[in-house]
Image 1 (cartoon, rainbow, N blue to C red):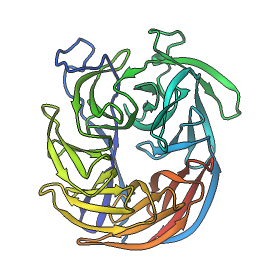
Image 2 (image 1 turned 30 degrees about the vertical axis):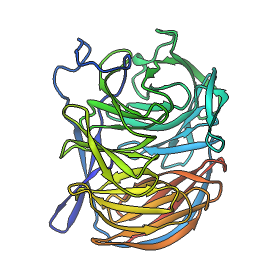
Image 3 (image 1 turned 180 degrees about the horizontal axis):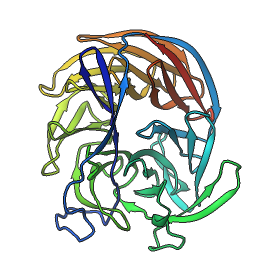
Image 4 (image 1 turned 90 degrees about the vertical axis):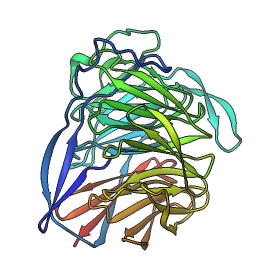
Length: 406
């Protein structure tokens, strides 16, 4: 989810949503409520921060930060003070200070045997369960939800409230996490609940009020919908939506009550009704759609992994408005806060593609060197600069590309 922009006069105001909760329960289709659920939908709090208008960016410099092994995704919290890096091969999550660009904490999972997947041979392999893939932050920046590639579910990591951290397992499926301080020494050992969703969970998204969490389950061909609860295990599955082959990217349109999911094994996006949490149908796209984001004009932006393209689709009509080629295998995409610039990590090309988003086309601006197979990307902005944080899966690092805004 990207913060919304409200244009008043000549000024642009960045509305930074401070999120509410995410969590679990047994998987399956059910509609019964429990006493742990919020009695009413919880309204979002917001901090309104003025952001100067800009329509061009100029590259200034880049800075490389040591990161974990096999970093798969990066994610800023709502106030953009912290960045979280999900290290799939390192079986950990790093918490970085955006100001100092240093690790503040590491959440390191204790590995247990599991079955993974070799994407080159399309075969199962021996692996470990605790391999972080993607994340979602909720509860006023206090809970980080992480999908574990081989554990068939997601876990909540409480970032602020120590009373929510259990020193003993509540369930046999709980995951042991070692909390490592900035000095590299172990500070704590806690257990987090594993919330079962489906096989090979990938992207996690939320509704704007953070009452519902959605998870795409790659090998289960399903999307899990979880309603947030206030106590362990902090959410429960209320719907499992079957979709066609290989769901991954998710974007929620709260205004229209729809969710769009990329179906990588096809040329379609699934459309979910957010009131009934049911599948409405499919929207035509191009081949192998992977990641998806949305602007404030009901336009959906999609990366097409195999064919090396990004596209823009009108969510109302389902028509593709325009597209552009990128270097090979565009993976994660992100929009600037004014929705005018799109960045795409291009995996096998080892590039970061930078495009300007127009009313009727993309304007390719430049491609930046991004060695080590870039995958995840997120953006920090203030009035003067934009920082594009890109993680490399094989490089063991995060590169920060700084742009001057004009």
